[in-house]
Amino acid sequence: MTKPGYQFRGRAKQYIGLLHQEYDLYPHRTIIDNLTDAIGLEFPKELAARKAMITLRMAGFTDKKAKDVLNRYPSSLSAGEKHRVALAQVLIREPRIILLDEPAGTMDPITKVDVKHSIIHAREEMDETFIIVSHDMEFVRDVCDRRMFMRGGKIIDIGPTHEVLAKLSEKEVSTMAEAVAEERTAAEK
Image 1: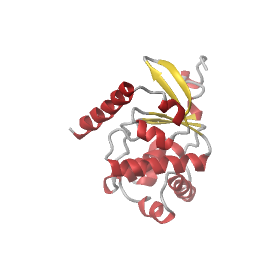
Image 2: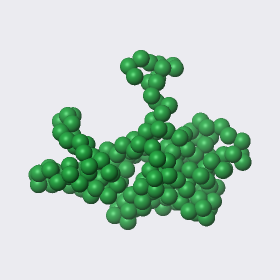
Image 3: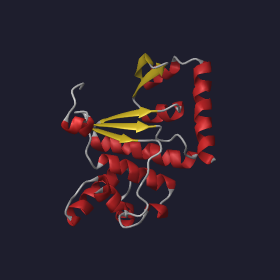
Image 4: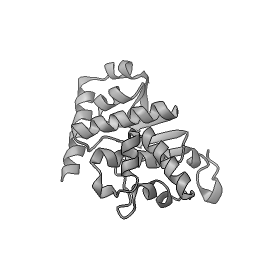
Protein backbone atom coordinates (compact mmCIF):
# COMPACT_ATOMS: atom_id res chain seq x y z
CA MET A 1 0.00 0.00 0.00
CA THR A 2 2.96 2.35 0.42
CA LYS A 3 4.09 1.99 -3.21
CA PRO A 4 2.43 4.44 -5.59
CA GLY A 5 0.21 3.05 -8.30
CA TYR A 6 -0.71 4.35 -11.72
CA GLN A 7 0.11 8.07 -12.06
CA PHE A 8 1.41 8.00 -8.46
CA ARG A 9 -2.05 7.35 -7.04
CA GLY A 10 -2.57 4.90 -4.23
CA ARG A 11 -3.03 1.37 -5.47
CA ALA A 12 -6.04 0.81 -3.19
CA LYS A 13 -7.89 3.87 -4.52
CA GLN A 14 -9.74 1.88 -7.18
CA TYR A 15 -11.27 -0.35 -4.49
CA ILE A 16 -12.40 2.45 -2.15
CA GLY A 17 -15.48 4.66 -2.46
CA LEU A 18 -15.68 7.85 -0.39
CA LEU A 19 -18.70 9.98 0.43
CA HIS A 20 -17.66 13.25 2.07
CA GLN A 21 -19.86 14.99 4.61
CA GLU A 22 -20.06 17.98 2.28
CA TYR A 23 -20.78 16.08 -0.94
CA ASP A 24 -21.82 17.94 -4.08
CA LEU A 25 -23.88 16.89 -7.05
CA TYR A 26 -23.39 18.71 -10.33
CA PRO A 27 -26.39 21.10 -10.38
CA HIS A 28 -26.42 21.58 -14.17
CA ARG A 29 -26.49 17.83 -14.87
CA THR A 30 -29.35 15.35 -14.60
CA ILE A 31 -29.18 12.57 -12.04
CA ILE A 32 -28.22 9.99 -14.68
CA ASP A 33 -25.37 12.27 -15.76
CA ASN A 34 -24.33 12.75 -12.13
CA LEU A 35 -24.11 8.97 -11.83
CA THR A 36 -22.17 8.35 -15.04
CA ASP A 37 -20.62 11.02 -17.28
CA ALA A 38 -19.93 13.55 -14.53
CA ILE A 39 -17.76 11.10 -12.60
CA GLY A 40 -15.92 9.75 -15.62
CA LEU A 41 -17.91 6.59 -16.28
CA GLU A 42 -18.70 6.24 -19.95
CA PHE A 43 -21.44 3.79 -20.82
CA PRO A 44 -23.74 3.44 -23.81
CA LYS A 45 -26.99 5.25 -22.94
CA GLU A 46 -29.08 2.11 -22.36
CA LEU A 47 -26.44 0.48 -20.15
CA ALA A 48 -25.97 3.74 -18.22
CA ALA A 49 -29.70 3.91 -17.46
CA ARG A 50 -29.81 0.26 -16.39
CA LYS A 51 -26.75 0.59 -14.11
CA ALA A 52 -28.05 3.87 -12.66
CA MET A 53 -31.41 2.24 -11.85
CA ILE A 54 -29.74 -0.71 -10.10
CA THR A 55 -27.48 1.62 -8.12
CA LEU A 56 -30.32 3.95 -7.12
CA ARG A 57 -32.24 0.91 -5.82
CA MET A 58 -29.14 -0.10 -3.82
CA ALA A 59 -29.14 3.39 -2.32
CA GLY A 60 -32.74 3.00 -1.15
CA PHE A 61 -34.94 4.24 -4.00
CA THR A 62 -37.93 2.20 -5.14
CA ASP A 63 -38.07 1.21 -8.82
CA LYS A 64 -40.71 3.86 -9.49
CA LYS A 65 -38.84 6.62 -7.65
CA ALA A 66 -35.50 5.71 -9.25
CA LYS A 67 -37.05 5.92 -12.72
CA ASP A 68 -38.69 9.23 -11.76
CA VAL A 69 -35.43 10.92 -10.64
CA LEU A 70 -33.15 9.80 -13.49
CA ASN A 71 -33.85 12.80 -15.74
CA ARG A 72 -34.37 15.37 -12.98
CA TYR A 73 -31.84 17.87 -11.69
CA PRO A 74 -30.48 17.89 -8.11
CA SER A 75 -32.31 21.12 -7.24
CA SER A 76 -35.65 19.32 -7.63
CA LEU A 77 -34.78 16.64 -5.05
CA SER A 78 -35.26 16.62 -1.28
CA ALA A 79 -32.20 16.56 1.01
CA GLY A 80 -32.66 12.83 1.63
CA GLU A 81 -32.98 12.11 -2.10
CA LYS A 82 -29.84 14.14 -2.84
CA HIS A 83 -27.94 12.16 -0.21
CA ARG A 84 -29.13 8.86 -1.69
CA VAL A 85 -28.03 10.01 -5.17
CA ALA A 86 -24.62 10.99 -3.74
CA LEU A 87 -24.39 7.54 -2.11
CA ALA A 88 -25.36 5.96 -5.45
CA GLN A 89 -22.59 8.02 -7.09
CA VAL A 90 -20.12 6.22 -4.82
CA LEU A 91 -21.75 2.79 -5.17
CA ILE A 92 -21.95 2.83 -8.98
CA ARG A 93 -18.19 2.28 -9.17
CA GLU A 94 -18.64 -0.96 -7.20
CA PRO A 95 -16.01 -0.30 -4.52
CA ARG A 96 -14.99 -3.03 -2.08
CA ILE A 97 -14.77 -0.58 0.84
CA ILE A 98 -17.11 2.39 1.26
CA LEU A 99 -16.04 5.26 3.54
CA LEU A 100 -18.76 7.60 4.77
CA ASP A 101 -17.62 10.78 6.54
CA GLU A 102 -20.33 12.03 8.95
CA PRO A 103 -23.13 10.83 6.63
CA ALA A 104 -25.86 12.39 8.77
CA GLY A 105 -23.86 15.11 10.48
CA THR A 106 -25.82 18.18 9.42
CA MET A 107 -29.23 16.68 8.75
CA ASP A 108 -32.59 17.20 10.35
CA PRO A 109 -34.01 14.16 12.19
CA ILE A 110 -36.39 13.10 9.38
CA THR A 111 -33.69 13.22 6.68
CA LYS A 112 -31.34 11.39 9.04
CA VAL A 113 -33.80 8.47 9.23
CA ASP A 114 -33.93 8.37 5.41
CA VAL A 115 -30.15 8.33 5.19
CA LYS A 116 -29.88 5.68 7.90
CA HIS A 117 -32.23 3.39 5.96
CA SER A 118 -30.43 4.00 2.66
CA ILE A 119 -27.05 3.10 4.19
CA ILE A 120 -28.43 -0.06 5.80
CA HIS A 121 -30.11 -1.04 2.53
CA ALA A 122 -26.97 -0.41 0.47
CA ARG A 123 -24.84 -2.36 2.91
CA GLU A 124 -27.18 -5.34 2.75
CA GLU A 125 -27.44 -5.19 -1.06
CA MET A 126 -23.71 -4.86 -1.73
CA ASP A 127 -22.43 -7.09 1.07
CA GLU A 128 -19.26 -4.99 1.22
CA THR A 129 -17.48 -3.18 4.04
CA PHE A 130 -18.84 0.22 5.05
CA ILE A 131 -16.69 2.38 7.32
CA ILE A 132 -18.62 5.24 8.90
CA VAL A 133 -16.90 8.12 10.67
CA SER A 134 -19.29 9.86 13.06
CA HIS A 135 -19.65 11.63 16.39
CA ASP A 136 -23.36 10.76 16.46
CA MET A 137 -23.55 7.76 18.75
CA GLU A 138 -27.27 7.24 18.13
CA PHE A 139 -26.61 6.99 14.39
CA VAL A 140 -23.67 4.64 15.00
CA ARG A 141 -25.80 2.44 17.26
CA ASP A 142 -28.54 2.18 14.62
CA VAL A 143 -26.33 1.60 11.55
CA CYS A 144 -23.14 -0.18 12.62
CA ASP A 145 -22.65 -3.74 13.77
CA ARG A 146 -19.04 -3.15 14.91
CA ARG A 147 -17.48 -0.02 16.30
CA MET A 148 -14.01 1.37 16.80
CA PHE A 149 -13.64 4.14 19.37
CA MET A 150 -10.73 6.54 18.90
CA ARG A 151 -9.35 9.25 21.14
CA GLY A 152 -6.45 11.52 20.17
CA GLY A 153 -5.87 9.55 16.97
CA LYS A 154 -5.42 6.28 18.85
CA ILE A 155 -7.72 3.26 18.86
CA ILE A 156 -9.16 2.79 22.35
CA ASP A 157 -11.63 -0.04 21.77
CA ILE A 158 -13.00 -2.26 18.98
CA GLY A 159 -15.94 -4.62 19.16
CA PRO A 160 -19.67 -5.05 18.80
CA THR A 161 -21.34 -1.64 18.79
CA HIS A 162 -23.46 -2.17 21.89
CA GLU A 163 -20.43 -3.35 23.93
CA VAL A 164 -18.17 -0.46 22.93
CA LEU A 165 -20.92 2.14 23.47
CA ALA A 166 -21.64 0.71 26.92
CA LYS A 167 -18.01 1.43 27.93
CA LEU A 168 -18.14 5.16 27.09
CA SER A 169 -18.16 7.55 30.00
CA GLU A 170 -20.95 10.10 30.40
CA LYS A 171 -18.43 12.84 29.63
CA GLU A 172 -17.42 11.18 26.33
CA VAL A 173 -21.07 10.76 25.30
CA SER A 174 -21.91 14.38 26.14
CA THR A 175 -18.78 15.67 24.35
CA MET A 176 -19.79 13.79 21.19
CA ALA A 177 -23.38 15.04 21.48
CA GLU A 178 -22.03 18.60 21.71
CA ALA A 179 -19.92 18.04 18.57
CA VAL A 180 -23.01 16.83 16.66
CA ALA A 181 -25.00 19.88 17.84
CA GLU A 182 -22.18 22.22 16.77
CA GLU A 183 -22.07 20.62 13.29
CA ARG A 184 -25.82 21.11 12.87
CA THR A 185 -25.62 24.73 14.06
CA ALA A 186 -22.75 25.48 11.68
CA ALA A 187 -24.66 23.91 8.79
CA GLU A 188 -27.76 26.01 9.52
CA LYS A 189 -25.78 29.26 9.30
